[in-house]
Figure (cartoon, rainbow, N blue to C red):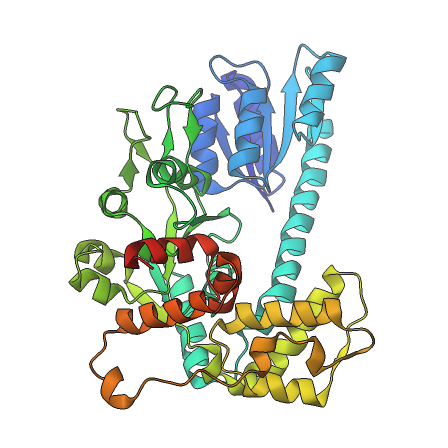
Length: 443
């Protein structure tokens, strides 16, 4: 049985086709227009859509394009009484599965729907297999703290609760966010990510909420935001601690009312989406400092999940290194090298301030520079074999805030790095995030 959506502005054809497909055991929704079909698709995430081409307002081609954007996994069959070769070619180019000419035999449509449903099933299974290959090895852990975090996230995934993933950069928050989506009832919907560190404030607002034509210089057409793109799925807000205060207020309103306006628009929109957020900041400290709204923090932290740093997951290091190295070797088209015992000892001794991201970076460098079938210590970055930086004295540390400790560490890394990008890689953060930290601290 598949979830189907039948779209036609002719009530008789729509009803007859829906009834025929229900008789085959499918769950069928029906809509009489493009906008109505989009609302039904957002609510029910159909696997197969059968739509007329000629409809008032939004026609079938426009509906196809919007469905491809919002629900890329849906298989779309178009119907028309005005068939042309050019129309069929355009439909296929836009991603239609098939192009049916009216009047059609019901048996023909039934067969097409069965084939489309099978394609949708194969896509779903393929996505699940990819997830099985990519996610578990990075999340399986012998560390009790990591096991607790994964168990908590898996338990919360079945609900609609907002998750706040906490932990240092590179601990796998983005991987866990994707896993939460895959474990949730929304798994067949889209998973959309927006990084709150990568855009200027006005661009970030447009990217999140969308904009209308003429809202600002360069806004030549209406553009939906990531919220709308994530309809019936999950929106992952990465590095939420970097969100400007003005946007924090708008996000809070959405979380409370599930309503928003595009930039420059007066019309209020509503969308069904689940929010997962992540940050490497201490948001409670940010709230105390006035840089993050307390009400938004409590809205986000319905289920807070804290991921431990890699230095607290020593028993996982070997398995993580082997998995990452195999994945990197496949990406570069190489045989997976074995890790030399001396190199393995260096990996085990390193403190990994950049966590799993730093480990992946070090292994990729070693793989590329390794001359043969063994990955030796000479191929690893110098930082991996260097002694850990001397920690400040206990008397000094006890008087420092967490932010001041971070500021001093960032300053030391910047001073010993040739470029901003190198410093960001050593810190395990995005260069844009490092640039913002420099600007905030005047470094």
